[in-house]
Length: 347
Image (cartoon, rainbow, N blue to C red; front, side, top):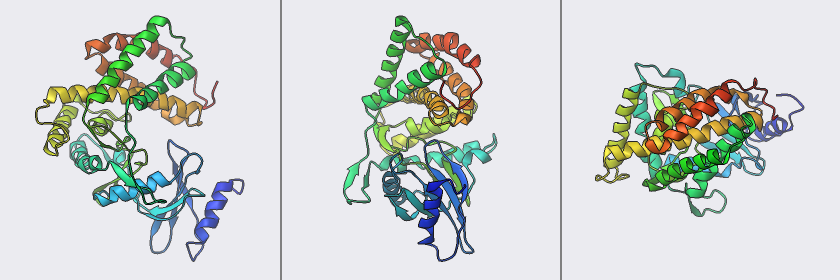
């Protein structure tokens, strides 16, 4: 950080009003939004300061969800001090250990079951209290418009901006039919509270316990969404036998907590899970491209090949999506491989 960074200077001034001694915020990360996080170390404790530009990423939803998640027993960052007008927060420090960084073939089953055990608590959160008015608000619904808006990110940013593909009428019809099928699947599932980005980079490991971060975009939506976010992570792939075993674990858990009817068989659950994963991965590759071109964050582009492979592999299992999978293999994957080196600048 330099003296030319006005938000960093403002954050320093804001922190001086809270700490009696001089502190030095050290940048530890930015995320896929416009937020930045800094660590502050004192002789007695360590804290995290968040810089979240209020016109881009308001902090009120984060604080509301932090309170709601803590109330059901989840370990989340505790907001100690906040300024919604400036977009600054001072929070407890959950450490540096992302779950992803410790996973191995030997321990992944243990840790993923531990993570899945958090989902009933997350599923129970369907509303939060506004930090300003005190009013209780239902979380947004992951409805048809929401699902289609996410799918459109793929069309706009991966196909359009990154690959510059011009779709024929037949190709556009194929996309529309495939997306319709995924929308129907999402809307047919029971709805629960949904973290919406529940994966191994958003779970921190501290003293053997899993802590949950990056939950401010929580909604009410399909019961399989968070489980598929974890088990078919865009950032790492595990053997199908392990994924199926963990799917069974989540299915039984969801039935036991009455999130899924006992009359719903595992085959139906697996279809929901597979197609929900497809929708999420289609959205994700679009977001990775958008992060590169709109937000100058090219690192996420490296995650697109694995995610596209997921999409093709799962789509091939369903007759309604076979043509879509074949089209991706024939038209999109070769175009992606041959695309120009990334610069982080929109062409």
